[in-house]
Length: 199
Image (tube, rainbow, N blue to C red):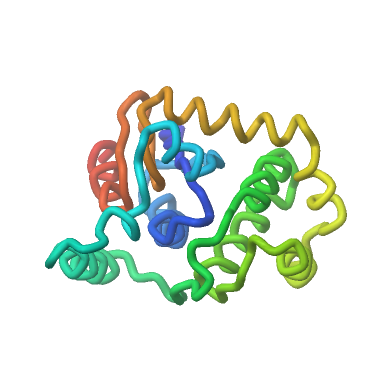
């Protein structure tokens, strides 16, 4: 039986996108099965008094450059075929993450996740504009009307709040965060540690 790993993600995190791109290969060569758990990164930051690296690294000499070196090293181990910086960053991901909650129990959930990550970091666009989101859903052959109605559902809104609060209660402070049982792992670099933990 595969070992389950919770993957706490927000489409606004490029490192969550990197992780998403390589998870299928990791699952194929291991006994791991990743369960995608949508959270709102802004809500996690607010609850934990955290900020994004784009903010925290401002004005620091050498550390941002080292971060880029580490990313290059990671990409040599886990190649990602398609990535482009989003020129509209930061993008408010609230609508997209509510959409992820709505799509969770639908047969198109995986296609939705693939599409939203691609729209943020593969073929980036300004996904916090309703017209852009709607066009993207149609482009990726997703039920735009149902999803756009779903993101306005009070129950969907509350489920995203609850998922975010539960993530903080478990110890999360950013994304990507992974839980292997009760063990927390933060950052794409920890994927290797997770693989080794079950090998």
